[in-house]
Image (cartoon, rainbow, N blue to C red; front, side, top):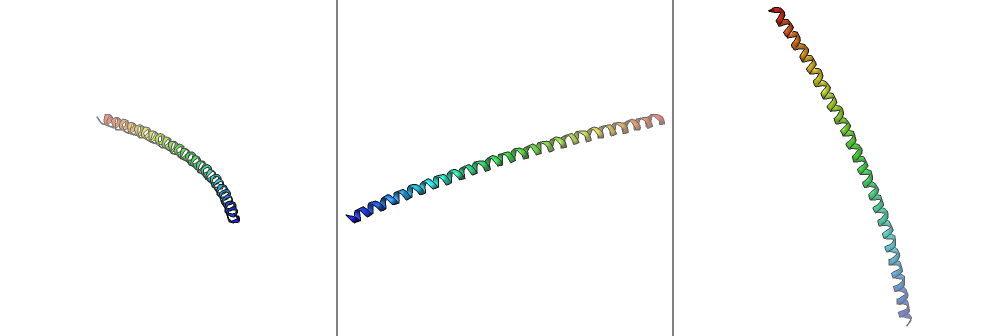
Length: 91
């Protein structure tokens, strides 16, 4: 009889320990999931910031190319006018 009672006590103690361990594991997993979500949000924020930086760089490069083309066009136009002027003077 005593052996049966000790077995029951041991069984209850083991069950309580398993429930506590499971509960602790559940809390730890929730914390890890929260941390993972925060890291994911931080990563998304960094991606958006990087994308914004690259868009700004693209706009700057595009405007620089447009200004350079406009300047080259003006220089070429001026040179053509000079050449025409020289040609017309020599005729």
